[in-house]
Image (tube, rainbow, N blue to C red):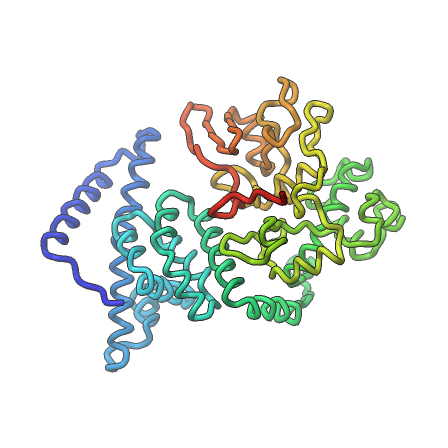
Length: 438
């Protein structure tokens, strides 16, 4: 796609704006300033960095164009020899240039500081591995993606890009998606080594999403069982996790009994694997569509065909099949969230509900927005998943959380500053809401 140089008038106006930004940065009180100074500095730094990054994109494009004439090395080479970047950093810079070639609106937004290179990296990761047709279908959505990039955090936008690419691939490259899972299974492996400096043994297990979800489900069940036992009262969480993993691998509980008898639930003793898979009703009943959600509880994509098989081989959890009649609103008869409620929360939240946190749902605690002791109900409308750090902020840190009926959340710092006011759910598919079975 051709790129035109800015007019003299445009360049003059941009330089005048950048000079004002530089003057503000040079005069900022970075010793005694308050929160307003910090916010202003980071806003101006983003503006300056966006302009510099857009120049780098253009220089990368020029380096690539000069390469056939022998006037420059590979597009990445100037980043390494002149820009001081690593090989990986140079490759990422070249990928950003590719993104801007295909989605020029993002280059304009980068120059103006509306998006960052992190947004471009999210796009580059999402389209990697897509077929040409799927990549073209993705770039056709640049207007909608840019609208979200301007208002969403980078982590949220990255998930949106990944989900969009996955939905497109599922529609256009269904065979490729199934083949990908087959390749992942073949490439799964276990590596072991001894750290000579610490004497610690390392075991790295690399698994396809399906078997990884099964392992995590078994591990989470053993962790929960051990945390309820007196034997683990003096153990740190890391120690409990290690002990639970050994239980799973050896088939023994902490007291020597088999895990089938050591606190296992009736469901786990049924002989069927219990794996939580998040899938919207339309995908489950009609097949893949443009807004499909089909992934493990940790947000790892699964082919729709695999989910259909799991529905035959596994315990189909109520969170997968909507409208099963399982009660989710238990009011004040219980203080602790039920398993059904945790599953329901996991369909809406991939992880901690703090806007800047990336910790996964499985390590979160369920927080009562209106505290139990002040009359708060153990209902979905009053529950949020929070990691340990942000759970402490909510209880001991003086932070205030407000949750609306449509799951919009407002986080207010102890000094009264609102740091986030928006949706807390990050797994709702775009487009029309999923109504579930009639």
